[in-house]
Length: 342
Image (cartoon, rainbow, N blue to C red; front, top):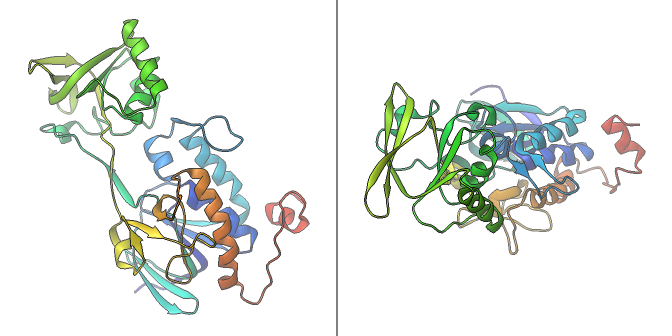
């Protein structure tokens, strides 16, 4: 076993909630290391919709997933967190009071006084549509996420799906793509009504295409897409010329090793005490989309609130001999000093 990396807190997950947890922990003098299976910070925000606007972050009318990630990374700079990307925590064992040994799938070992699980929905991957040989086109002409909109400029794009992601990217890519076609198996959508109305207005104006049916096959050589074979509701098939295909069939998430950590679970989510966001194991916390409690809302702002309360309780484990006095960042000179704004 490798020599352990010792830290006050190990945060599992470097999405927005995990990043903000660094800030809240830092305010109460708790250092943190973060582990994430992805190869960069930001979680699903940065991985799946880096250029898609988010509208419900308090005081910020609109910000992209990558923009939010960048802002959080700037905010936590004073606390100098250490990141470990491309790592999946496999085991957590209690070895002290408080002290946990956490081992990743690559053999990296951490010893932490508290563990904060901020893993979103767990590890995730896009659901692949049932299209024969689609793998041959993936990451060349078939994409399950839009990381840079400019990659689709002047392209003929077919988007499959009827949820928010499909409608959002239909509307966002329409201004820069040569042509956009939305394909859905029925003329009924699960997306926000305003998005559906805007899409239908574009169709009525002849500015984009909507086809009710299913993509059955793809054409093209060497991973370069030339067309999508679509079967309509009458059973007739036609080939639609296109350069890129974007299937949005949702995400398949799994808890993975989390199920083996002895945590109390409900519907594949971790149950927590809402006063502290502690799990059934003292010293292990769960914040963000990974947890559940009565009235839970899966919102980033909810995860931020949970992180703030978590940090207050975590202080008791990390600094048991220190009395914690709650302070406001606007008026506390000691917090100003920590943040480098004194």
